Image (cartoon, rainbow, N blue to C red; front, side, top):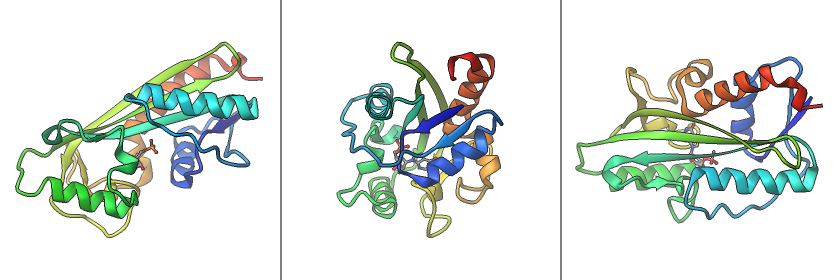
Amino acid sequence: MKILVATSNSDKLVEYKKALSIPEIELMLPEESIDVIEDCNTLMENSRLKGIAYFNRFKLPVLADDTGLFVHALNGAPGVHSARYSTKGTYDANVIKLLKELEGITERRAFFETVIFFKSDEKSEYFFSGKCHGTILSERTCSEGFGYDPVFLPDGYELSFSQITLEEKNRISHRGLAVAKFKKFISHHKDIIK
Ligand code: IMP
């Protein structure tokens, strides 16, 4: 069973492969990425937009997702705009902007949310979501790391997302929880993928 992961982000594929280890399922990256403009207002709409574009092009079961970091003190920003929060849009520039926006603010609660869209044929459409609550640290815990990981402290932890192992992150993270729901679903419905 082949499932296309609608992304060109190899960080994401690594996380998916670790989290979704079902022997019968082979996760693949597309031969070429499609430039989908994710300009919707919700994670659900954006993930669907991306998933439909890849399904229509490659005619394979597709898994697409959209994630946002929602910071309470910033009225939910960066939210659906998490990838393009700063003008430059790099992980580094996004983190710098976030820390600047939160300078002097003590209320630093935030959550990550992921919505996964899955489409296995012309008719079907499924959604799975996961959330992870935590706080934004006042400085980075390391110089590099996936997205906002270096400044996100998950609830109940003393280490940021970049300081814990990928196995641990997958166990508690927004994406990990959404993938777990998808994994449960697909394990019970293997017939829908040929
Ligand atoms: P995407 O929808 O998965 O591409 O995520 C949008 C943006 O959110 C990414 O460009 C990252 O900056 C950020 N992001 C997504 N997932 C994570 C995560 O697990 N940790 C930190 N940042 C993330």
